[in-house]
Amino acid sequence: MKKRWSFILSCIAAFTLMVGCAEKSESPGASSDDGKQTAPDPEQKYSLTLMTWQGSGAPQKVWDDLNAKFNEAHPNITVVNEPMDSKQYSQVYKARVVSGEGPDIMSVYPADLESFVQAGYIAPLDDLAALKKLERLNLDQYKVDGKLYAIPLAIGGTGILYNKEIFSRLNLEVPRTWSELIEVSEKIKENGIVPFGMTVKDSWFTQFFIYPLTKAPVQAKNPDVYYKIAKGEMKFGDTAISEAFEKFLLFRDKGFFSKDALGINFDQAKAEFAQGKSAMFVGTDWLLSDIRAINPEFELGFMDFPASDDATENEKVGWGGYSMSLSIKSGKNKEAAKQYLDWLFTQENYQSFVNGIKWFPVLEGIDVSSIDPLANAMSDSFVGMTMYPSDNDVWLSGVADTMLKSIQEAYLNQKTATDIVKDMDESNERALKAK
Image 1 (spheres, one colour):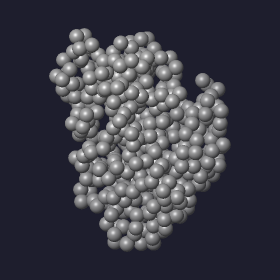
Image 2 (cartoon, rainbow, N blue to C red):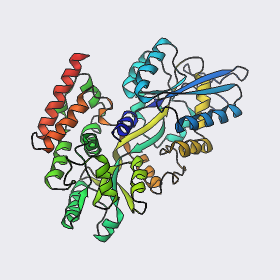
Image 3 (cartoon, rainbow, N blue to C red):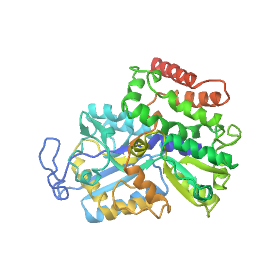
Image 4 (cartoon, helix red, strand yellow):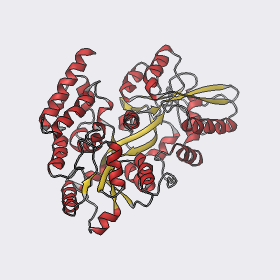
C-alpha cells in the first residue's frame, strides 16, 4: 500500500496530457498557435502515440478500447497506447521528448511543465473546445505566462472518512471547523472509542493528516511557495507549515490517534477503522474498496477535512487535484490530437473512460456510483474546491523523506514542530547543493 500511495502522490494533480491546437469540424472557433482555424486533413493518415504512467493491465484495455472506437469514427487517425511503468516513465518520456521522438499525447510532470513550454515541446490549448465543459475548475496550476498547457482528465481529493453508526449513536454532528473537529474527537474518546485510526510506523500515511493542514496557511496564500523553496528563493521556515505539525502533535497529545500508532502499520490502522474500533480515518476514494472489503456492512460517511476554523475556507480549499490529464507535443500532429481530446470529452465517451479507469470525473453529469455508493458525493465535494496538489510534488529529492523521519522522531517527543521544519530546510539546502 505504501507503494500505491507513493504512486498516487506522484501523479495526484500532477500529471497532464497536453494538447495543442484546434480543429475546425468538432471545435468551431478554435484556432492554431498563429490564431488561424485549423483541422486535421481528412485526406491524410495520422498515427498518434499516447504514453502515460499507468502501465499495462486494466488501464491499457480501457485506452485500447477507446482508441479503437475513436478510429472507427475517424478512420484517418490511429491512436496507439504505449503504457509505461511509473518507475520508468519520468526518465523515458523526457528523453524521448528532448530527442524529438516524444509521444504525441503524454503525461507531463508539474516540475517539467515550465521547461517544456520554454523549449517549445508542448502546445497551448486555450482554444480547446472541451474547456467550455471545465469552466468550474481552477486550472491556474497548468498555466505558464497566462496560457494553459494541460487539461485535466480526472479529479481527486482527500478528506475524512467516518463511521456513520458511531456518529449517530453518539449524536454527533459532522464537524465543519477545526475547533468542532477537536470537540467531536473529545466526545468520541470519552466514549471509549479511538477518534482517528493512525499509523506513524508507516510514516508515509501521516501525510494524509499533514498535507490538508498546509493548504490554506501555506499554498493558498502563495501558490508558488514550494517552487520558490525548490529554487532556493525561500525556506520552509519562511512559511506557516509548522502549524500543520503542531496540530498533528496536538492530536497525539490529546490521545486522538490509535493507541499504538508507532507500533501498528497502515493495514492494521485501516482494519481498526473498518472494524469500528476508531471513528475516523483520513483518506480518499481509493480507500473505499479496501474498507468495504474488510467490512461490507460498514456505514461509511465522508466529510471535507476541517483544517481551519473558517468553515467556508474548508469548503473552498483542499488537498488533491487532477489525477491525470491529457496533453500533446507541438508539431504536425497536434490538430489530430486536439480532435481526439474533443472526442474523448463527449459525455458518452468520457463516461466510458471513468467507468473503466474508476477515477472521479471533471465533467458534470457523470455517474460514478459504480465505483462506490459514496463516490458521487465525494466527487461533487472535490470539484467545488480549489485543490492544491501534494506538497512534495515539487520538493527537491530527500525533503519528504526527511520530513517523515522527523515526524516519527517528534511523535516520540524527540523533536518539536520547529525542529521538523529546520530539518526540512537543511535537507533542501543539501539538495540544492547537489543539483
